[in-house]
Amino acid sequence: MRKTIASLAAFTALTAAVSAADLPRRAYTPPPPPVPVFSWAGAYFGINAGYITTTKDSVTTAGVFPGNDGVRVGNRPAALGLPRDGFTGGGQLGYNFQFTPGSGFVVGAEADLAYTDLNRTRSTTGRLGGISTFRQMGDFLGTVRGRVGYAFDRTLVYATGGFAYGAETYRGVFQTAAGQPNFYGSSSRVETGYAAGGGIEFALPTDSVFNIFHSNAVTLKGEALYYDLGRRTVPLVAVGPGVGAYASRFRNEGVLGRFGLNYKFGS
Image (tube, rainbow, N blue to C red; front, side):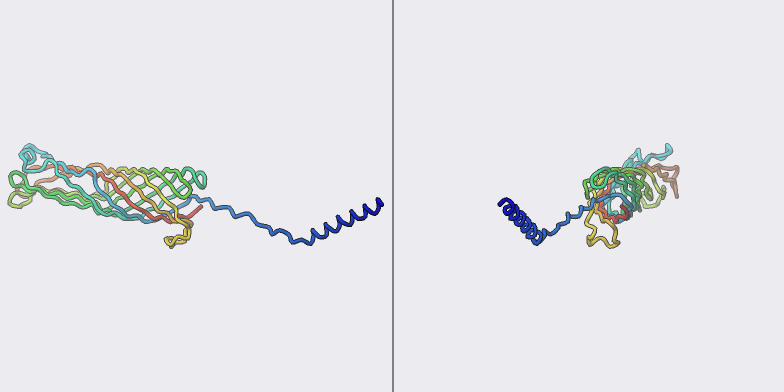
C-alpha cells in the first residue's frame, strides 16, 4: 500500500512538472534607457541683438586760457546733455566648463563684438549768439569676459564681467553769431574699460528647428551689461578769428540689454 501511494505521488509531481514546462514563459521587459544628462561644457558661437543706451549723457566744457570766458559769460555751455541710444547687434564665441553634469557650477569665458548705433549731434545758442555744436559717435563695442553661474539642468543663471573696448568719435565746433567757426576739435580712438552684468540661458532640444549647424545643443540667452569706457577730454583750438582754446570732456558709460542664440559643440 505504501509503495502504491508513493508511486502515485511521484507520478503526480512528475506530471505537474511536465505541465509547467509546457506553459508559455513571461516576456522579458528591458529596463527603460537612462535619460541623457545635459552638460553645458564645450565651445560655442552665436549671434546677439538688442538695445543700448548711455547713462552719463553730458559733455562739459571749460576755457583753457583766461581770455576764453565764453563759458563764464554764458555764451558757451558749461554742460550739455548728449544722450545716445540705439540698436546693437553682433556675435560671440566662448567656452564653458561644468563641474558636474546636470545641475552644478559652470565657469567659462566669452568674447563678443557688436555694432552700436550710438550717434548724437546737439547744438545750442549762447547768450551772445555763439553757436556750440557737439557730436559723439560709437561705432562698436566689444568685451572679453569671464562667466560664473549655476546650471539647473538645461537652465543656466550666470554673472559675468571683464574687459571692454569700443570705437568712439568726438567732435566740437564753436561758431560766432554770424555762423563762422572759431574753435574746433575732434578725436577718434578705441577706448578701453570694463563691463559687468548677468543673464540667463536656456538649452533647446537638440532637434530644434534652430539647429541648422547640427550642433549638440542650441541655447537662447537674455543678458544685461553695464559698461564704462572712461572719459575723454578733447581740446577745441582756435580757428579763424578765435584765440586760445577750450577743453570739452565727453563720457562713455551705458547699459545694454540683448538676446542671443548660441550653437554649442563638445561634451
